[in-house]
Figure 1 (cartoon, rainbow, N blue to C red):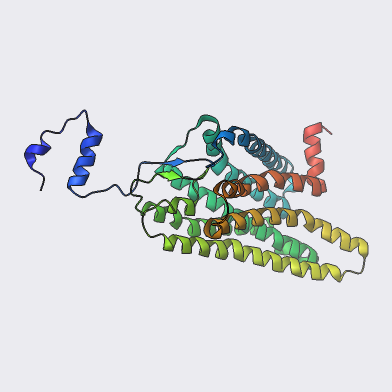
Figure 2: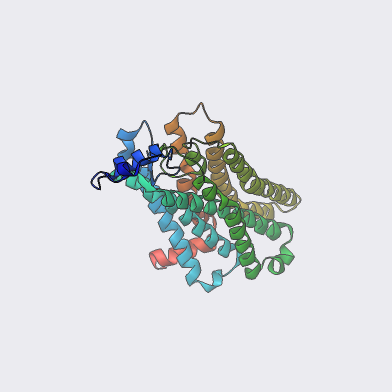
Length: 334
């Protein structure tokens, strides 16, 4: 029991020391700090300014490319088709993923602004993983779009309408929200025992959980389940759809028609491989890559926030003739 006479001697000019003393007297410890510290890339602090150059270029190239896709499709009514609506959804998720991560990383590299509030950290975690899950759903819908276009072309216009694409997009958004919302809520309940340092450039679910002094077994299980139920299942369904597409294409007798069918899928396959390879690699090495150097892991973990958003508009701009021509009209004026 703390005597009241001792409580009355508290000095207002030294609040921190007395708060700590009070907590010690009543056996209280703060479970959640007010801020976390993002360390950037541990071991490469001296090179972070140089590392920021490809980060910056990738981010702004991706941002410009995706905004151009949204602008062109929005301006051209002839492009109000399921395929281009899906490209717009992909562009929005690309912007969301990169903007959730890169601006804070650049603040660390350029200005050494490593502090992030707990609410800011948990918000970043939520939006990053939500946009990743939405993009996975969009890629799955794009694979279904290609499957119908090649395997059932006569019914394409009736099966995949703009309204149906919008409904599928909303379904992907709802699934992402419901699966990802528990993550930051669970992180808030963990005890951190004064540890505030996150060895990363951004707040990723398992990276935040690892600095806790509590049991994170459930968090590891939750992360793995989400990875396989959302990302893994989508990937398997995409592989299945392309297996069916390849089987249908090989049955086409005309070599020219066969080549045309494969060309329509090339861009999506490139985008899909870029996204899933970087995403799954980052997620799994966080849990099982103990032998990988921390700085190597963190640089590779940033790939899925940099590479797909930069490459997607370039790939589709090169491979999609109509989009390429419309972009040329606005850029070059013809």
